[in-house]
Amino acid sequence: MQEDCPFEKIYPSALHRDADYFMTHAYNEAIEAWKKDEVPIGAVIEYEGKIIASAHNQSRSTKDPTAHAEILAISQAASFIGDWRLNQCTLYVTKEPCPMCSGALVIARIGKVYYGLPDPRMGCVGGALDLGALPDSNHNFESVSGVLQELNHDILKAFFEKKRQANLAKKQAARDEGTATPDN
Image (tube, rainbow, N blue to C red; front, side, top):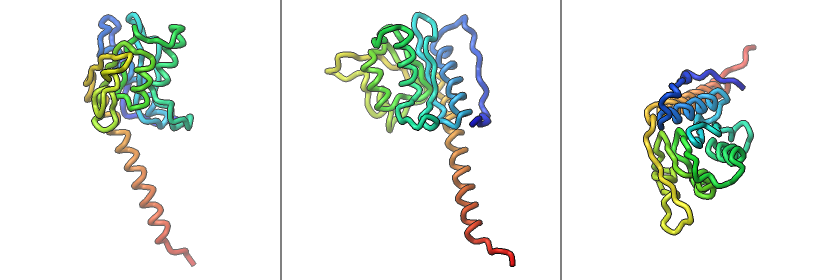
């Protein structure tokens, strides 16, 4: 199912491969998620200045609760490198990783994480918890928040507003159908 997305992809210059550059590619993945009626979260993994993995949420379409952008990107990156240890890799993701994804980042030994939108309720690389900085863990990683935060906030806010409006319209239609009288 292809959905219209009111947000357009951004094509950054490859001359400046900084956090904004890589986050823009993650943002473009979020747009792909929207088009597939998935929660618009995207992720890319960088290794030696190149994107080696890119993914967006696919939980709804695959009916798999683990099909988050981060998990899919981690799998791609491990396959590309040929090792499950991603110490030299950096993840860029549009929203702070959840507990599951944050745990996977620890297990994968990710080098660093940049995320756009903090999540104080469920985020686990600095929001609600910081699994990347557990004192007794065998692996810690640095995380940086707020990269292209407004852009990433806007797409998520618009997506959920669209979903709320669609749900209200369905409820109203059901009410209208229940009160309609048959023509005789």
